[in-house]
Length: 215
Length: 243
Image (tube, rainbow over all chains, first blue to last red; front, side, top):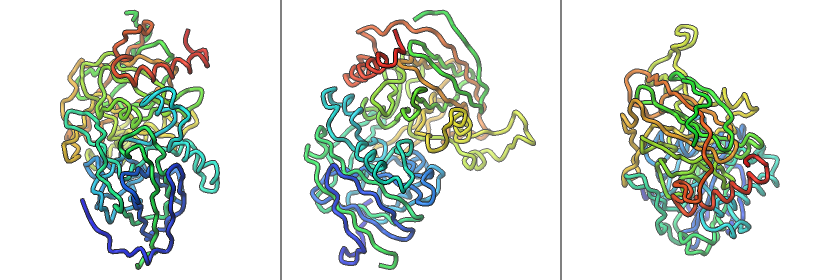
């Protein structure tokens, strides 16, 4: 569902540009709103969330889609944890549909999807491994790296059970915005994928904006 | 494949178990009465950080459902097992588990004190028990398989649970391509619409598998699976797990 935000970028408490191939990790406090802005269009922001007080509780793709009865995420979706607690609500979305069943690219899965020779090309899960190695303070390790959201990616499922990869429906300037229902650690890999036509083989930067409650 | 059954057993409905399957063996699961659900997770027993990955499995085979020909992948680009036989046609891997709260809302509370073996177990807690036996906990719980159950999505993404997907006597057979720790439960699918808590027993049989031929159906089902087999071969050379 398309829903515009009422928030102004001028009022944001912080703004961060995340280059393709980099990660972003930070705590978003309960009541804060954060936006991921697709600066140049059809860029995948592979995103995970953890309860900042207890990272064993984390975003659960499968519980989220089952409880809302729909496989796509958009404005109105409540992102649930593996304990089925609300973590964030998507409060604005100008893209309209985001994937959460396609997972993140990994060097190993790239060998399967594309070619064995691609094994050393950069991938989202390598960015996450570096993030958890460089940020031990969050208490997250490889076992916590699970099924993510692919913001801005379009992965339609057909009624006869096929999974298709369509051209993106995002564009430069489109965004998705979430309000935190608990203190959460957000971990984003701005996808470095060079083998997928969904981003026209051209990974680009995204921007993260954060607003304090009351703006 | 050898016809000789090395081991067979039946797990009652609403229960859980776990076991190690060696590369080169097959596990056939049989829905005894129809309407069964088998929640299942896979781990590499020598490094449990390597585990079944549902998104990788679906994405690399461009599928939302699982059936004969599909391979079930780890997060390391390797194949735990291949679905070599399937009389059902659609198995779910996106709806996760029933929880204590889901079971209570649908079917009421049946605790052990009052109901003994007729208590109502849920899939989530069943996996927690089996995970703990191997030093793991909820942090290690990935999206599971729901064998015998069908969840479809329409063009708008709306999900629906399809009743009577599996009939009495239906079966699925998994051929293990690498050593795999298998955790499973027979608790109801979280979207099951039955009015009574379904207790559907599942039998299983273990056999030795024949060598995987070059023209193997699963290996050639998609080009991606050929590469998955290559990755798995390299692993098996490294660990000496398969001759």
